[in-house]
Length: 561
Image (tube, rainbow, N blue to C red):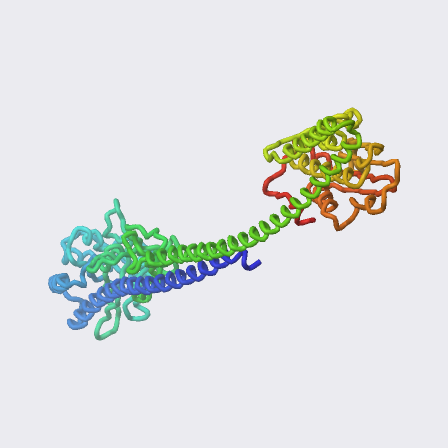
């Protein structure tokens, strides 16, 4: 059983080994690419974190400037200081640096704020918008002095809940704190961008009373782009959230598209601390990303594994075929030897039968002949009939034959031209090639036996032959052929038992042709005065339209003999 499936097993085992090797290679390369991309993601997060740190340092430097002067500096000094900071790389991404007063709500504080805005920027503006909060934090200084920043002057940041929460956190903890995502008042209302602010409180040196808040507004897209858009450019797609990743908390998303390649590394999720708030950042490979080590070698390894498995399986199958062909040749040689032995035995048997039949016909003809010419004519006719019968059986291309015609040719060898074919009782049956040869051999054996041992030895012998088609117990048709011969005088024991001898070649040949060739049965009943032979075979096996597959094979009579 294993031998038959050896090529399949070889293919499966080698293919599995090849696939495991390819899988190991894929895993190794994939892990290498993942670690490489993780390094890229960490670099991107580090850039963003460094940018935030730089902005926080800007605000702390302004706080240090305020503390060094001991009071809120004048607008000119503040402008000079901010203009100096603008020259540094840290300022990229910052909308400005400013100061917001921390005052109680009321007309008096509103007047003071209006006066300070008039003094600093020449604006006739007071604190806005209206509020019911007890305190205000209006913007009184915001540099650089440009149109967007001027729109923000006087804005009371304490009136807006998100900004107020950050202001109170900075005041309570007395350190730098960031707000959540807001829309900056500097924004162009046609294309607003999300932003946030960072606040640090400034206290009066002597009393410790809070004077206001040094702060900086940021456009979040500008902050991320200023951090990421520097050499070397990173092949990443960035999404950021203020807190947990939800649609409502998303504050930034890259304009490029994430990679849809099958070998793209999985996204990396990281966090950044921004002045008391936690930003969640997801780094994905972008559409321009290409892995440092591609999986081509893995694919080639898998293909090579399959090809090797197929080659080894083919080689195993070729070896198997060589063994099978060798075994087939051995069996064919043995079969040929067996067939040759059988043919030799059959030829010897036929020669003996032929000589016996010729001698029997000559004796029979001599008894009934009146003179030599009569003997010569009758004997020659019987020899010609015997030759015609043998010639008919020897024609291998013969497709069919009438049973009665075949039988009559054999009987003419016994009875000569005096045979009355009308006494042969039975329907017209066209035999196929296999059945014709089988019945021809059977008739030949029965006729030979009659000449050598049976009723044909004397002129008083009688021969009763008939055939018919009858259904059996299973309603399947069977051809029944009966051969009955009788002599007026008893036969000696040797002659009466000649056909029924189990070891005789003629008996074996009859059994092989009827039972093995046609799937039928043979019944031989000896009698003191003769013998009864009944042959029964399936009708469908003998009729001329029965087609036998060459693949089914016909059992050799020699194998059964």
